[in-house]
Structures are given as C-alpha cells and as structure tokens.
Length: 499
Image 1 (cartoon, rainbow, N blue to C red):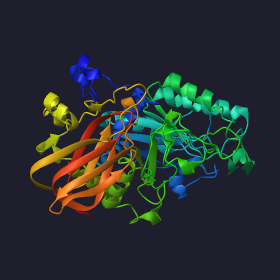
Image 2 (image 1 turned 135 degrees about the horizontal axis):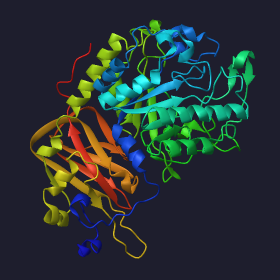
Image 3 (image 1 turned 45 degrees about the vertical axis):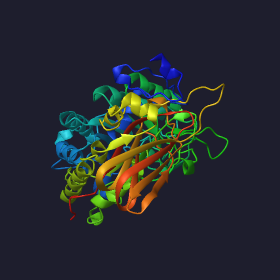
C-alpha cells in the first residue's frame, strides 16, 4: 500500500491493516475521554437534606436527622435512568451544605448522624452497587464549597476536602467521572459563625494537587470542571452547546488571576476554542425539572420527551455529552411521572436511530476511490464503529495541502423521507472538519439543506421539516484531511406519543 502515500487522497481501514497515513492534528482525546464521549447521555442525581427542606443551596445548619428517605431505592432510580438511554450516573455525594451521603470520617455532618437505617446508611454505596448491577458507569460529585465546615477558608479544610475525595475514590469501585463545581465561597453556617467567607478561587484549593490525587487513585476517570482538565462545563444549565462547537478549549480568566473553577469566562464555554490548547469537550447539564433538587411544587413542570430530544440534538448532537439532572423525592425514589418521561424518551431514541437509511443506498465518491474500495466505504460508515473510517489525507506538495472540499454522494433507488442527518469524526485524529454542506436531490432538483461547522465526535443536523429525496451530496471542507467514522440518515416515523 505504499502507493497510497503518493496519491492525493488515501482511504484506509485500520482494523484490516490498510496503510495509515493520517497524522493527528492538535490535541487529541485520551482513552478515558473517548470512553466518556461514547456514553452520549449521563445523569447527575441531587439528593440530600435539601430534598427535605425544599432548597437548592442549603445553608449548612439543618439537623441531619431530617434525612429520612423511608423507601430509598437506588435500583429504581438507576433502572429508570437506564430506560431513558442514560449510560452513566454521577451522584452528588456532598452538595454545598456539606451534608455527606456516605459515612465519612471527616465530619459528623453525614448520614451517620441520621437515625435513618440506624445511622448505618450509605447512599453512595447503594448507587455504586446499583450502577454495577445495571451496567451503568458510576461517578461522583463532591462540592469544594462546604457551608457547614468551621474550617472552610483555611488550609485545614483543603486537607479535609482531599481526604473526602480519598475516601470516595478508594471505597466505591471504579469511577468514570469526578465532578468539581464552580460555586465556591459565600455565606454559610461555618460551624456556627454564620458569616460570609471569600476565597481565592484560583489558588485556595490547590487544584493541581487535588486533581493529581484523583489521577493516582482513579486513573481511568475523567475530571470535570469549568476548566477541565478533561471536560469543560458548557457554560449554561440549559444543556445547549453552540451551533459551532469545538472539543478543544483554552480557558480564559475574567481577570489577571489564573483560570480555575468559578474563575473563567464562561461565555466562551459553549463554543470551545478552534485549535485550542487542550482537548476538553463540553458536558451539557440540565435538570429534568426546573430545579436540581426535588420540590413538590414543580410537579407537572418536567421536560417532555420532545423537549428532551431538542436538548439532545443541541448537546450530544453538537459533540458534547448530555448530563440530565434527576431528583429523587423525600421517599428516596424518582416520581412516577419522571419515570414515565424517561421511558418514553428512551423509546424515542431507539426508534429514531433504529434504521439508518444510508444502509440501503449507494455511495459515490471520487473515481479512484470507487475503483479501489467499492462498497466497503458504505460498510465502514454505517457499521456502528466510529473507528472504521473513511480517511482522507491531503498529500504533501512542498509544504502545501489541498484545500478543495471533498464530495460524497448517497443515492437511493427510490425517494426516501428523512429529517435527521448524523456525522461523526474519528476524534482519535483530532477535530479536523471545518465545514460540511449538505444538498438533497428533491423533485425540484438539487437543494441545499444545511451548512454546518464543528463536527467532532457527533453532529446531528435536525432539519426544520422532513425532506423526500433521491440523493444526498456532502461537501466536506478539511484542509488537513479528515477521518469520518460514521454517517447516518434517519426519519421521525412512529415515535412514541406523549402523554
């Protein structure tokens, strides 16, 4: 296959030993980041004293004995999440109020101080075991801000906080993600001081040391915060990434201090940074209900399956991962309406992606590609494997690369009706495609359907309405070459009804 290096473009399949000619461009993902990206949708579960006080941010002075989830069932919550298409769960082990859902040795403000289960309860353990039984990845959130701790604001608290993470990272099995919030410092109980405490967000926690602890104890976990180091916050709680989203990112501070959680210009977070310094894709968080914790007055205000789909397209479909907030009730289970919504949405996802119409089509590309690869290209692009690719590597001509868009056509024997188009890069080579223009051959001739930028791990093009066409044409602009892992065309037929 040495001749493949001398022609203008090379098309290769790694799994069968074809010559590999495409070199990575810029930052590329780690194995842990690739695994996280493949999850698509995860959930974050907020449950604690706030559930019983109907607050979002507890002050840190609530009696821990108020925590009495009489019918707590982690399996019910995990099964409902799984039915909704969720593949990983992050449990909020400690929120800003400082109440710990595991029997920590670092504070008395935990489940051990509640008469629930005679002080022997361990919510973290229950969720870890439930996730293991259902085959879901398990991760943890432990708030840096602690409004209960008298030591907050001193180095003693930083040591205590790291000890909490050491407990969490060593007692509950493998973690896929460790979550760090940007909310840091403010008013609180602080052991009875009841005052406001302001910390230096850039330096107080010694993040490099804290994250090094996570790396040592959970080397396969990704670390999330406003500034990574592995994942970035998308910058809003609507679950929306920008229309043009880059998985690379260079965090910027709002002042002359170094960027840190809670110390970053979040207006850039939905977009990422083209050719940014770090591979740091966006995690897009949004609660199923208006709040992150359960509030009875929010009954009937849950997002519908159609609204969840809209969010899915703007998060998972823009190279991110959707993190859906789930809120157990005071009984310790998900509300029955929440469970129904998740089930219908999960069925919706299965129905949409059940039939890839490209599998019944013919693919036409450049003449030399047709002669060399025939129908194998269609197999590579529709086999459900992002690492069996159509690779286009621009040939060296001195120091110049070809900058012409590459065109791929998809033809059907009979017109097909569809509304959703999916494109996936093999991001092991970096995010390389700058722009894609999609045209359709309808009864009116060739029409432009969409022009998008920022493909990355997954781009979903949700058309305004269904289109009937005999063919599609993709014009792909990637001056440094690209690796297209998957392509799909889908209809919205027979979607489950709601309510």
